[in-house]
Length: 136
Image 1 (cartoon, helix red, strand yellow):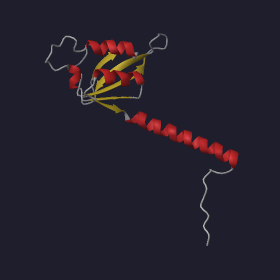
Image 2: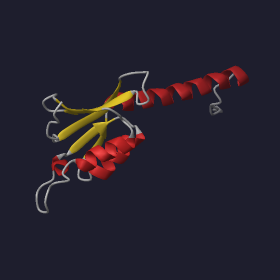
Image 3: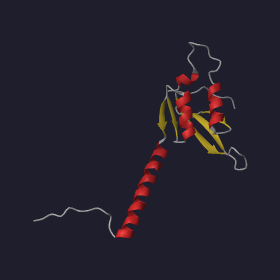
């Protein structure tokens, strides 16, 4: 597959490809505006991605607008290697976290708090919230 130009709004993610190989996940880039896959890379490992993004614009001369500089927004999950790649190669772009992962993170935290309160109720018989005593 020939790589399409980097878009103004770039979505990045991975997908599970094969369980019998060392690099089980492949990296995919998509243009948010027209839903076209920009490219698929055989690994989501940071060193592989770093080499890939380094090679883009490597042949551009000084003064020429680099393709990576045209990217205004990059949206991904919270996977640390992606955050590092975005910070390194898309310095002018705004990093966006996709809403699915934000909602999942909030739900996980709410669940942890709920579970903690349930354990507290089982052990003490109360929520641990003191109600003010009102004297009449």
